[in-house]
Image (cartoon, rainbow, N blue to C red; front, side, top):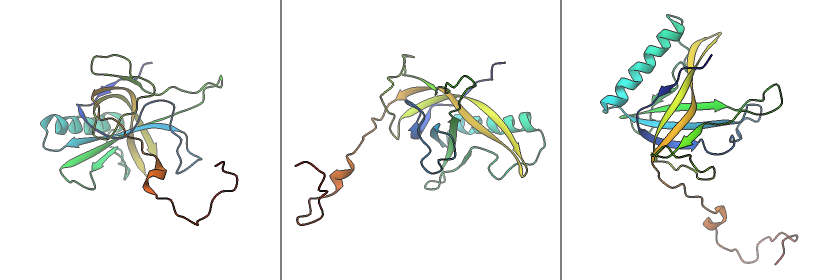
Length: 182
């Protein structure tokens, strides 16, 4: 049975890790690798507000009157700007019975062309996410996880990778690795 796909309104992306192979979960190696993105919604935008109400209705549809968990909804107020709401999307990579691993979301540009596998998406890009809803239940209540399956990049902000060594200057007389070639 195919899962129902839901679609977000166009919104600003933050911490977009939807491109390429699943990103390792460096904070907790016991957890699976995952593809993630946060969408930043503007509370004053009627389309964004209506979409959030629609997603709250999905909780009722999927869980009825069951007790909500403290993290029942995958969104919360933005910690830096209370006029914004941040919605989190997460898709865990899993291993199939045949040993192969699951694929990540399929990405497209604004004309529905396939997204280049090596082109990362920077903060501030405007995207639309197609996702499924995973309804979960635990001892303390119920909740929802939004799993990204497709995304369309409408306005790209280039991701800038900085060389971490660029922030330092050379320190004369300091330690030098004797293994390093000069």
